Length: 615
Image (cartoon, rainbow, N blue to C red; front, side):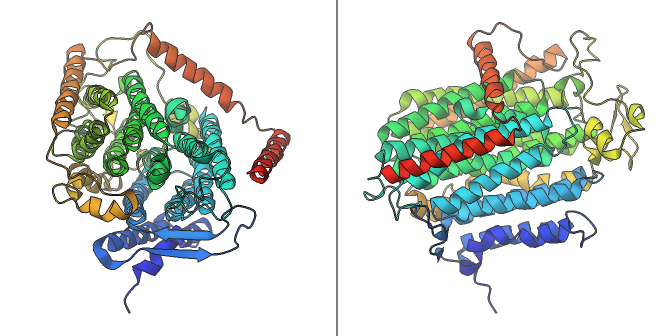
């Protein structure tokens, strides 16, 4: 009997359900093990479809939600769906295996994998959705489970606040998407036909519908003023940081705009606004990444910047380039985050750069992995990031947005600078204590274990960091400078291998034969053939390499971990301060008072229904 992937893949969102049930009920004694077959099946079925063992298909159940214009339960599988599911499956497999080691001794590991299964299932539903109604379910599902995962270590300071910030930002996107789903005329909602005359004849027409989708995508992908939740999300365990940044939550906004690019193309103003938003966020995120003294937050702002490149690609009318870069980032950003987790594990939970340095000899696999992720991020020629970033720049020049495209070219220098800073500060610069600098030193990330022997295990874990550090199982290894580190287990290092290979070679899925573009053409339209490197792309690569080298020289000459830039940097300080104040005020909406939530919900639904009746 031959497995029919055409019929199976639309139901990919159910693949993690058996693992969820077996793991959460304790039927499988080893937490997390029962969840891995689900994501392996997700990866295998998606890859098989891409290799030609499946055909485009739809699943439709009518009358499912009769109170919205298009109330069908509607699923669709095409090349874009299969590609997104393949990326989701591959990154999820790596993260699941990695989590078995990283959270091995965590008392909440079973709860973690239950949330993870729901999270992956919600993302799979989001990308298989054929209309706005089903998309909205996956969209909100990803947002809600992100709160539980970001706040996983709920006894730690600021973790609940970080989760609430994610909910606050995503509430804006959810509201915009709900309005889009109810304002379209009756019978509309199919993601592939939103641009039709019948569907754009409703209240507000093309401009309003396009604006709502852009707002929804910006909230999910941390663009513009709605970026604030993503750096705060670093309060969660490193594996979920990798999954959020690489293949799930932040990718959802880019996916939505790429899937509905036909609608955006009807509004040149919407495209131009998206391009400006993307370029501005790319530059802002890069500058903010340079300012960070925390390894994970530096990578988080890096994600904000790279998502800006994807939004710019959408705005340039090059949705394929945006999705291509989404795939590249999935590899190099997951690689960078999981490698950061290896380092943090090795130094007993320390995340500040000043507590790292000169770890290259002790952690050779992590050093090589972080280097591969870094050069792919800034686009060293022949790496995945170089091909996909070149496609975005090419789209900018072809669409006559030369000024914006040149801004992105210059922004690659900042990319090289911030990722080089993180790399050299972590692996080669001298630790700050060794350099004799004791002023303004940040308190250690975690207090000594002996100070908390009387605490409950969960409380101790909240204070001491990820218990997967393995300190109980392996004695610390002494370094020549007197520091002690913990050697990572194979569960932490082996998942880095496929990600490193992808960060180097994923670009060849498109170059030189254009195979990826052919698979995605039915959904995204034709794409320009890529050369080895265009003129602007080569210049961008050289600028990125220059920034990386400058950061290395700067670090090694200072012989100390880089600290944040001093105060007084004009617009940077003003922008960062204003964004923090805005984030605090916005997150304050989530005050825990259920009565206000109910009132706001009732008023919101009333406004939506009134708008729908008028439309």
